[in-house]
Each structure stands twice: as C-alpha cells, then as structure tokens.
Image 1 (cartoon, rainbow, N blue to C red):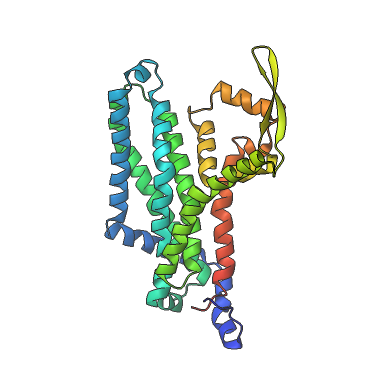
Image 2 (image 1 turned 60 degrees about the horizontal axis):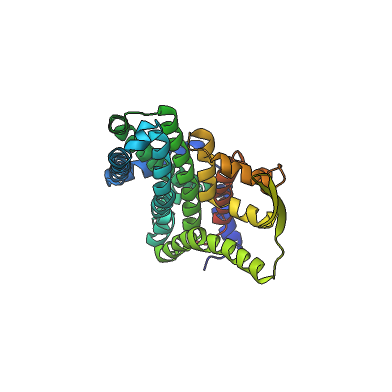
Length: 320
C-alpha cells in the first residue's frame, strides 16, 4: 500500500517534485510516444481505426441505399461510428494507460527515470501527453487514410461532420487516458492497475446505467418521488412522470453520455425534433444547463483535468 512520505529524508528526496519543467515533460512525452511507434502500437491502432471506418462505411453503402438517396450518409456514418467508439475508445485508452506508471514502479525503472532531472509531476504529465498523443495521432491517421475510401463509398460526404467526429473522439479518448494514467500512478503493480482499469470500465458501462435503473425501480416501488409534468398530445393534456433533477445530473456526467451529446453540436447527428420537444416539456420549457449539449464539453474537460490533478497531488506523496 502506498504510504505518505513523512520522514525528513523522504521530504528532501521528493522536494524537487513540486515543480514542473516543461522541457522535461516534453522529453518524457516524446520518448513515450517513440517507444509506442517502435513497438508498432501506434501503427496497430491507426490500422484498427482505418478498418473500423471502412467497414462501417462499406456496410452503410451496401445496405443503406435509401439513406444515401436521402443525402444523409455522413450523418448516419457519424451515428454508427460513435456507437462503436463509445465502447472501443475507453478500452483502448485504459489499456494504453494501464502500465504507464505502474509498470515502471513495478520494474523499478521509475527510480532510474527520477534520478535524471525529472520531477514526479514531469513524469506523470509526460506520460499523459505521450499516451494521449499515441491515441490522438492514431485516430487522426486512421480517419485520414479512411477518408478517401469512405467518401468514395458513400457518394455524399460531409467533411465538417467527419472532422467533428474525429475531434470529439480524440477529446473522449483523452478523457479516459487521463483516468487511466492517473490510476496507474497510484498503484504499485500492473495487476492492481489492471483491476482498477477493469473497475473503471464496469463503473461507467454497468454501474452507472444500473444507478438510473435502480432509481426508476425505487420510484416504481414508491420509495422515491418522481417529478411530474404536463404533456400535450394532439391537443389533449396528460400528466406524466420523470426522474428527479438530481438523477438526470448523475446521468449527464457519464463521459459516454457527454461524448454523444457533444456530437450533436459539432456534427449533423442532431437530436430528433420529437426528442427536443419532449425534453422541453419535461422541464416546462427550461432545460437545466447540465442537460444542454454545450455542457457536455465541460464534462469531458472535467474528466481530463480532475483525475490528473488528483494524481499530481497524490503521486508526489507515495512511497516508490
């Protein structure tokens, strides 16, 4: 278990770690990225994203003739790819960050790295930037190489939507990379780090959804009180029930939901008019700020900044 550094000797050893040297951060990030390129990790990810896009575009071109005739092929491509990246990107990011710090602590190479003029904060930020660069550039290369083929397959191709999907996928991937690197810095072994990564995946893809289902169940059993609103259908008014505001807030801060909602702003994959009207009716025409699409960017930025900020504070104080 990690312990706080409390002795005088330990304090003097870790004192330099309170500062951040940008040149040192850049050097660590560069080496981390170059190691990934040499191990073919970067090219493997680029090939994967390339094949994913081409496969989805090929299926859409083959089975979606009516969609193509309606001129909405890029919009549907964004929707289909986002469904895939919603699951795939967190897995890739968590695997990328899994051994970033824990592996070096387990092998003891972290002490050699820190014997050079690098502070702990430099190492942590360098690893985050390096792993984020691997994921971001592999996404960019995969999207760029697939772009020509996708455009040829679809016939109708919106570059703005395509680039918007890429940009949001990068932001979403960096959020999970930050979570992964941060957790890796707080664990002594790759086994514990791996368990932590699995726990994060279960949290956001099983537990988070289960919380909303549990709230709905408790409302159905009468243990929680729902909110009521008036819904008009064909000129007639009906009383309907919805989840409490705090339940919607819990649901909104899931990175996956934030990613999907943010795509509505930067691409043509917008919500349906019926969905927008229903949401407005549920909140009497005043949708809370945390359910508005622009707030999704704040949530994604939070998941990038908050984990690494906590890790920067804690990593200075753990016993290596």
